[in-house]
Image 1: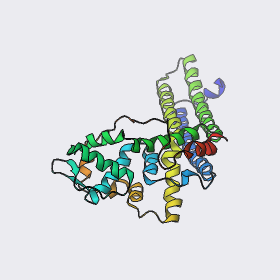
Image 2 (image 1 turned 90 degrees about the vertical axis):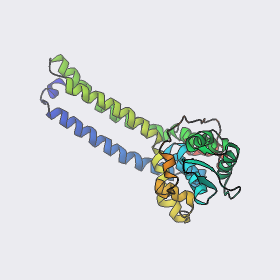
Image 3 (image 1 turned 120 degrees about the vertical axis):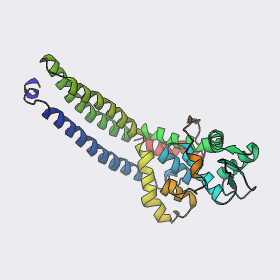
Image 4 (image 1 turned 135 degrees about the vertical axis):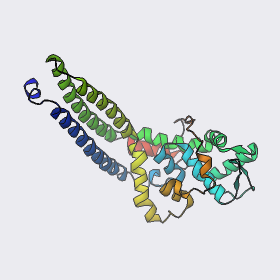
Length: 285
């Protein structure tokens, strides 16, 4: 390759290398999304993946239980079950008036703890089994999916393209060293390239959860079933735009806590079918 590389001086090589890398990343992003969407749409239509609860889809999209809890607490504030005080603490206003087991868990915790700051309540709720099970089930789905042969082939394709791009940069770096040329720019470019590739490969393992399944619900499942008027589906679709004004200041001091989750059980709405369904859709081929 040396006779070829010596024909391209900087900054032309660096510019061309950056443009090639950018083009490959964009092309892979489009290809990955199309391929993953095709794989998910190929699941059996009776699969639990197409019958998830709003909280489960919110968790898939955000990979954070805090957002799940925020949406449910927002509903309880909106129907005056929970009261926000002037000092930004919250407490139970009235007993009852709950529509789900998650809401019941929140009101039971407030009944037990009394007046409390929202970060403290959030931390306590993240440890409750009713919320842990949501994360456990969706994490189990992701685990089975990324172990599938179809995802494996897609992952190795991305890895191969990134490895080839790295090889182009690394050979240029080596050639510059052998010819006693300045290598600072290409060295920085290769280092940044490695960091970006690690980030993108890690992101690829989450893409089906954070983008593909939520997009299918947003564009296909919810319009077909006309379920988007449900408050929790509105929260999934619109995010913080549906939060009541009194609740918004409570979220500012909230910082992410540890997951407090494990993948040992599926739980939630998919129950015992999670393992078998995931295995069927992701573990085999």
